[in-house]
Length: 77
Image (tube, rainbow, N blue to C red; front, side, top):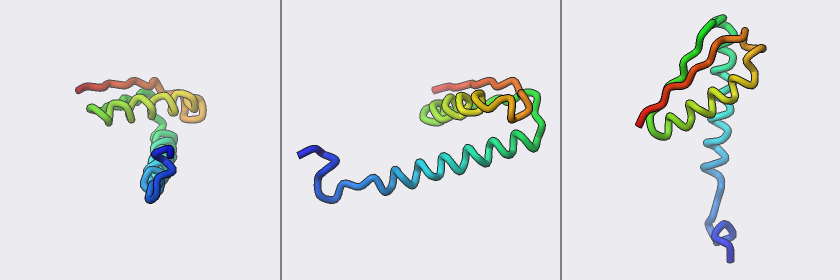
């Protein structure tokens, strides 16, 4: 039996986390658009560094719609 098929295995929590991340990214995009930024620096430590990189990647894909800000990422730890 595959571990995901074991009794009690659930993706419920992870599904919730994914929904929260999507909602957070939508809020970040809206805030960046409203602020009319020329430069955006995203930072993160450890796991937050991974989130910072992913946020920067997603924002860079929509850069033109955000007013074309310069996007930078700084991670540590």
